[in-house]
Length: 246
Picture 1 (tube, rainbow, N blue to C red):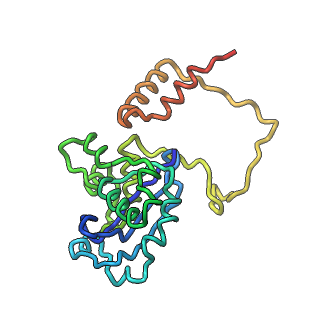
Picture 2: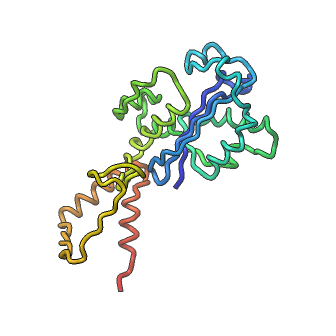
Picture 3: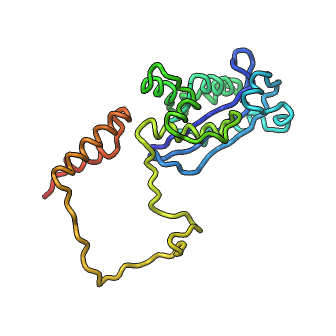
């Protein structure tokens, strides 16, 4: 399952009034694990940034003047997100702007729905926390995510924060770092592989007790409920149960 957490910054609030996208930030997750692949684009909107929008993101007309037009980056953007499920906070806003940009390029580019699926994390948050504030700052406070470095909005920064929020809101971070990146060190061994002796005794197998199995089932049920029936471990347990043993 490939997901892209996406955010945009714009010149204003309404593409129908000629406002344009000026920044796109994308963060990739595969099977709910952050891959560290991302896409970050600044775009020349060919118009002025509204004063109200400037107060939100701080991206000036002078900064954008030498940036590429959307037409120049559209292919690389679509190549990065194609086939993925986009996670966007208040998705109708960002999708509306991106569809507007694609329409300006002609019918051959279609719309975002032709390339990706979309999950609106704001709609998920409102369902999970009805009657409460569910903007990104409020969710960071609720899930104890440090966003103290976020003085202004920025598409890539907000996408990275939203990735953390989404994972916690839908069942927790499942990225278990069981390996090491090239060049990293583990106990001073770096990337060196240590081979276990063939003379070692067989490992002792400890079976879970009935009480432990019952506690495990209850925990999976809670995770499944909090993640809207997307508990991967529960699905794996079900698959193992249905396997016939000769």
